[in-house]
Every structure is written in C-alpha cells, then in structure tokens.
Length: 226
Ligand code: NI
Ligand code: MN
Image (tube, rainbow, N blue to C red):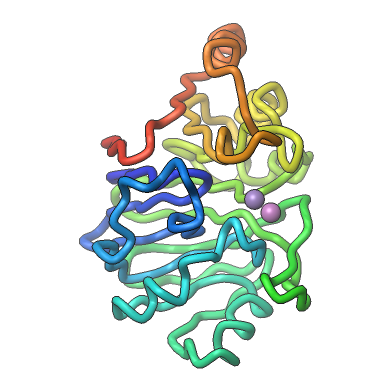
C-alpha cells in the first residue's frame, strides 16, 4: 500500500489498483498550498465525520472524478441531497466488501456536524483489510477502550491516528491507542494545521520512542510505502 499525505487528516491510500482518498481538507489549508487538488482523482472518498476540516474539498474532487463517497448514513445522505449521488452509506459495526477490500466502520469518540450545522451522525473510525494489508484510520477521536476490539479482530499493519491534542487524542493517548489496537506502527495526522493542534515534533517523537511505537509524522506531499 502507498500512503500520500495532503496535510491535516487528509491522505490518499493506493491499494489493489484503487485510489482511496480520506477526509479531504486541502484548499483551505495554508500549509498544503503545494498540493494540486484538481490532480487528485480518487476512486473512493472515505469520510470519518462531517466536520469541515474533513470534508471541505469533497464536492470539488467528486466533480473532478468518478469517486464514490463512503461514510456514515448521515454524511452520505447530506452529500446525496446536494446532488452527489455516488455514495455508499454505512454505520458503526458494519462491514462491506468493496472492489479494493473490506471496510468496517468502528467507533470514534468525538462529535459530528456538517458544514451547514446540520446533523452529521456519529463520527467513525475506518478499518480496511485486503490482500495487501490491513490498517486502521482512527478519524477524530479520544482514546477509548473500544479500540481493544480492533486489536482483537484485526491484525493491523499500521494505524493512522490524530496526535494534535485539543480536539482529539494527543500523542501520549495515541501511544496507548497503539497498544490497544496491537500495532506499533503509527502515522500521526491532525497536527500543526491550526494553533490549537500545533505540536512539538521532537518531543512527540521522543514520547513515541519511550513507548516503543514507530511514529511517523509525515511531511505534506510525502509518500510512504507501507
Ligand atoms: Ni472533527
Ligand atoms: Mn478534525
């Protein structure tokens, strides 16, 4: 699998010949100016929840591509009502076999409303499993004991977790989350975009190494082979 970081909690996973875009928030992000949003043509757009810092560029990228939106019933329904009809609604605990592998929506402890303030359902984490591997994207979440269920069910190759604190887990809780999901390879996201989520990278890496977690804090535009 290939991971490319677009800043904040937005990234592309290339797997099984498909492009999966997660939580696109690129054009409003001052730090992501170098990313050409119109060059991103995913097969699927996966959304953890409805907050603007996760869905800002959905419409633009949808119109530029043949992408199908995968998210909760409420988020897919909100985009559907705007005319973005290629959607696959799911809900927590449910799994579905797509042409790139299995998707399971799992619990996240956070909030979710759409950019216009309407109800965004419950926020989700996303687990993807296929012949190339298995990973967990935590979305925006607090540390929660429910993460142990993910470690029990799946044999994860890597996790993508928020580490910016204030709105989500900070790095210390993300280390506990890594232990709960039984995967020491963590890519940190949701940091440095705004002053509220600014982190000390060096201190964060030190906390990770004390916890025997292999933490990566990717640069915007960076691609990792996983
Ligand atoms: Ni959020
Ligand atoms: Mn967020």
